[in-house]
Image (cartoon, rainbow, N blue to C red; front, top):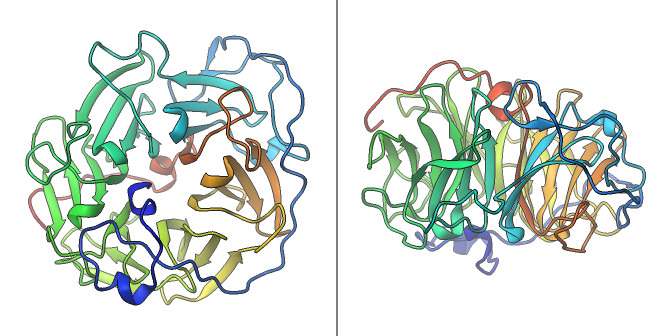
Amino acid sequence: MTARRTVPLVVAAVLLLTACTGPAANSAKSPGLPTTAPPASATSAASATPAPTTATPGSAFPAAVPGTPGKLAPGSNPAVLPGPIVIADRNNNRLVVVSPHGQVLWQWPQPGDLAPGQTFRVPDDVFVTPDGKDVVVTEEDVFAITEIDIATRKIVWRYGLPGHHGSGPNRLWNPDDALMLPDRSVVAADIKNCRLVDLSSASRSPLWTMGTIGSCHHAPPTYFGSPNGVFPLPDGNFLVTEINGDWVDEINRRGRVLWATHPPAVAYPSDAHQYKPGKYVVADYSDPGQVVIFDASGKTIWRWNPSSGRGRLTYPSLAVGLPNGDILLNDDSNHRVIVIDPKTNTVVWQYGHTGRPGRGTGYLNHPDGLDPLPPFSLADTVGLTAPPRRGRW
């Protein structure tokens, strides 16, 4: 999610004329619902977390030792989360799994995890695979997608040569939001190549692509305006987010566009996906940022966008609906992950110190991606059941 965020923000009219250079949207925002939030800048005292000993149901991640304290912001309610979450802690160059109580259950990489010559830098997004055994991570700013075996802690597959962008075999240019499908291929948005790709460990070239390299404007399925997300839907279709012009599109496996809309009053759409049937959630990667739930017609259903106070977001990049209807999101430049209750418009859970980056327990440094662990991960909630057709759509 980061490469498209490192360029200066410009107005939407300029975005529509920009091609393949990591365009961004302007930072304008509209008024929304009044919001409140509990104090969120301090954390409770806690002792170091001992090594967990049991497994997290549905995945290969370890679970917390009963009674082990954690570190959360005051006022956090652990009951709002259905289970642990994995976080891509970008500027700490690590993945971290945190329990609802703020316990650190797993971190990667640790000494010995990387083979000689391997690197792991600026993780952008992380998603658990459908079988719960691996995680797939985009290292967007170094142009690679990496799969890590949770149990062995080893890299088992990588597409892209870190540090080298391109569009040919084994090359990407700022890949974003890589999710594994049931056939173990990985679908991703290749932002600066203006395309969607489906990748496999069995091939040095994409199994299929959609979009036209070198032309970043909204005219799907032939062209995409710097796509930064492609998320599977329960019906087998895909939801695509385009930065240029603020677009979200539902596209079927044959490339037919079922609908396309502007997320309402969003300057920089990031990673839209299904919140509930017929409802979609998107983060606005802006300062102040916002989270919007909308429908296929572009109608606003709910909006979180306080312009000041503890609820103010600073470049949030991914918002995920939880089973109870709450919204889990990473507030990137505030260095925190939070849960918002849209019924009460309050922050009800927080890991990380607002505005204070760090590496110790209770701290994050530009968290840029997250996924609840199975059986609540995005792969589970979208109900992935079948792979897409092969070849170019």
